[in-house]
Image 1 (cartoon, protein in one colour):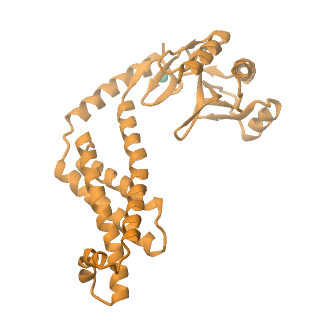
Image 2 (tube, rainbow, N blue to C red):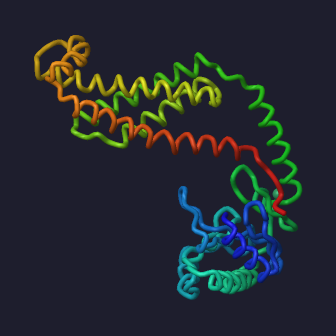
Length: 317
Ligand SMILES: [Zn+2]
């Protein structure tokens, strides 16, 4: 969150009598008798700061929010884009507030309406994990914000310690990883050839090459370290070249009526004597590499991010 947005969320927290976690900008605290969490909407890799989401862990012995009720609620509250109850979690998403002052006034208004509605329908604040009614606190657990009871907080913290130890003990199998990555690149090579023979130089084949290689390494290598990622990248570069050349070999074998092995070997020669247009050949290869890059960068960034957030647990301040 940049400083300007952080300031808006700080003001929002103040106006509603809540607190803002300085590290994440998440607004949380007790509102009436409900522990609330307010976070910006996140869709894929984009964060929508002016479309906040209010969530409350609560349950009612006599009531469950139905689809019709949610529809009615939305009709009555024009700023609400979504209201749902899912496994003790009440989530209310707001439409784009566009401006800071509007964001603050809308959230305050909707907080009041939502907690009023919850009280009216017998909802009681509860732990999102175990459902026990009573006091909860806002925690960050492996990439998610959640309101949980002290018992569950202790359990997840202990589990995280165990998981971290296990991850530490788990040794990476280099051979397994390379075999897995190679199997992954084969899927990538196959997709490059198939899509190209169908007439596409598609971004999809690049994404498949990247994802399958990295997943293959992780699956058979037990663990994906930075070393593993580097190995995967080298294999991707090599196998993309092979895939592209195999693709040309198929065309050559067909057009010149030679066997496939000869066709594969003759690529450099045919380029040299100009039978293969070198601009087309290298241009095509460059494009394939670009797509692999397009697939690999977000995949690797995602893996790194998940690794960083995995087992990370702390109480919001
Ligand atoms: Zn609990």
